[in-house]
Length: 142
Image (tube, rainbow, N blue to C red):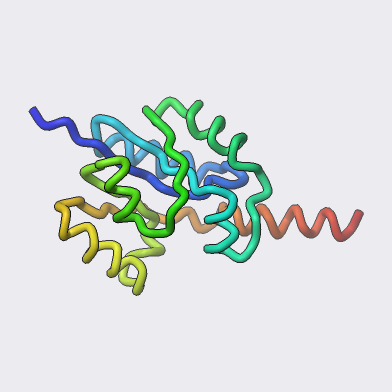
């Protein structure tokens, strides 16, 4: 019987139900789930701003989720380079990546090493971006 390792990367800032849903769905599609928690520096480079919650706290939150078997700090932008470190069989992403340039590149790169790319529905009504905007509004009005 094959032991299927899954990888679910994310910043996991301002942890919310969308994050939980991705981890829950990911765990149901593999035998062992590794959550890749993006470093503060990587998050700032990708999104143009630092996470609200520091890496050590985001890592502790994600490690504590029962669907997660291990958490890995992601420090390089190239997911294929991360694969060389973690060696997963399937990577999970939100479906906001499907059909995009970065999603297509992800699929091409992982096809070369036999890794399946699985997309899950993106939680549109709750996101870290919306939560951050709400927090920024509270700070501005204070």
